[in-house]
Length: 336
Image 1: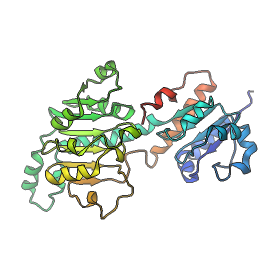
Image 2: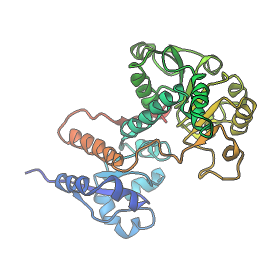
Image 3: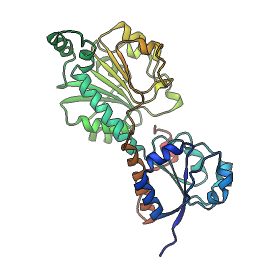
């Protein structure tokens, strides 16, 4: 019988570790690995240094802290792989990769509920749901006429900004509908665009012509404010903008101004520059901006799927198979 690899759970948010690695996932971890029972973080790591230095695998989730290369070499000299049961690894992955440690992320698991949320919002937007719901005080037929101006789903134009794992899933789902899909993503290979049946366009073209625009750009510093007030000013009178990307990618003042200028437009924001939402902010007071509290990503039982993806990849490595969710240095340049 092969000796089990040693593993640790590493996160500053123990409650999230228990949510993501639920009792079933923990049982699976213990069955496959010699798992250290204490959840480790920067505050207690020196009290458990022996376990850290023995560890070959790190399993983590939300609350993964940043470590310098020097700290990684000191605390985790034997670690071969880090499995992150959550989405973006931008805040910590580069240093681990520089130390020769393979990094894996469940970004595709977290992409599933975000794409589902977005797809549902697109269909509701095209059916005039948000416009009609704002007029719930009206009589039935008045509400119906108000929604009817949105045009419906047939032959609608959808703009996807950023076609990574989430944007790609949204495009895939939209294949089931009679819609034209346009995208902005300088990094998307043309063969993938062809498979998704989507057409390249500039940001200006998307904001000027699309009935629904949805943002899924990568979480990169250089993309801060890329969606400007000038772009929002181009939106059609009944167009809807959806953001599940990052709040800082939007010029929020410009968005509010464009929404107030044309009150038949709608913005659906699941992410903001500053969270939680200030109830006295301009966004909160703008009636045609709808805010949801960062719920597009994994919730409830959905979070366990992220741990499952990471355990599946760990077992593939153990069995000499090719893992599905490895992150490379090159990928960090474009991924969320």
